[in-house]
Amino acid sequence: MFRKILIANRGEIALRIICACKDMGIRTVAVYSEADRHSLHVRFADEAVCIGPAKSSLSYLDITKIISAAEITNADAIHPGYGFLSENAEFAEVCELSGLKFIGPKPDVIREMGLKQRARAIMKSAGVPILPGSLGVLASVEEAFSLAREIGFPVMLKAAAGGGGRGMRIVRVESELAGMLAQAQAEAAAAFSCGDVYMEKLVEAPRHIEFQILGDEHGNVEVLGERECSIQRRHQKLLEESPSPSLTPEMRKRISDSLRVAMKEIGYTNAGTVEFLMDERKNLYFIEVNARIQVEHPVTELVTGLDLVKAQIRIAAGEPLSGIIEGEVKFTGHAIECRINAEHPKTFAPSPGRITGLNLPGGIGIRVDTAAYTDGVIPPYYDSLVAKLIAHGKDRQEAIARLKRALSMFVVEGIHTTIPLHEEILNDPHFVAGEFDTTFLTKKNERAGEAAA
Image (cartoon, rainbow, N blue to C red; front, side, top):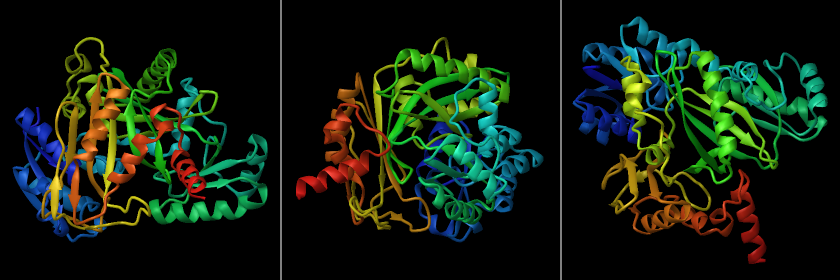
């Protein structure tokens, strides 16, 4: 087992990894920017190294500085968390060349899964259903026109090397295609230093379903059920739950079985998530692999009883899944997570600043993952996540009730947060009935406008 792990991240995920390491008796090293000097991950790690100014490119994304911090503290492994360098194949390679274990998939797997058109081809060959579209990047405007006419409008253009809605454009009519393609390529190049774009058939009003994967370094793969991630704003998830209210046991088994085959063929190791869209006929289509731990991993932990971060570390240390997951995975109850962000709940305008008052809810079935504290600062330079509030109940109804209770007791003063928005979502009859898709928020606002008129 590792003696000391450097955490190449910040905020709540860095603190989450520190907690797992403390449980396992592993020492930790925090890295931090000047803006995060007073952050809790710096306080609670065994050692901490400042790696530069607030700007991410000069600190959390600077591979040389992170490797240097690991070397001077004699760390023997690096956990990248999510975001930043977590899906950077070059970083994983540099870790290996520096004699540091990268706690994540192998560099070649990260590279293949990061090229989404390559991932589509691999999944298709393994029998996983994929959306009609290009199997490679679009080489020209002429190819884009030909393919769009073949699969039919509307279509979706996507950045091959990124996510989060950047480099993504919906094209509904042929006359918009050339302009939208140029926009998508330019945005992708600016965001990911790669302007490659591919095309998929657009599924109108889909549900977003993802499956949690664990693979060890001995060729074994386990699928830990799915998460429903359809409550979104501009392709950014707001609320996630497990299990999905839209999947049947037969669908779950069929997709899980095909993913075990696909991920074994890929040689996938450590934690990962395979994402799907579901159309109105309940057909699931593969869209991408996230080769890292996810923000929403706590809902899977609560329904399976497994610590996914500990599992990541044990897999990276060479342990087989048979020793990490004892027997068959058992799913218990229902879990829902709210991402509470430092944003205005109506306009979504960023709201960085100092937290002047804070009360974190508790009680049976409630978990809060956060690095926030009274008098702590939410800086304007990074993701606006303040906390993840997760509720677990014997069924979906109880999970919703517990989440509503916790939200009513969650107090954050000094900044705006999305707590009121989550309260509205949980009280919406369509959400309660499990009748929603990725257009939920738009439709909710339309209904509110009609009622006001």
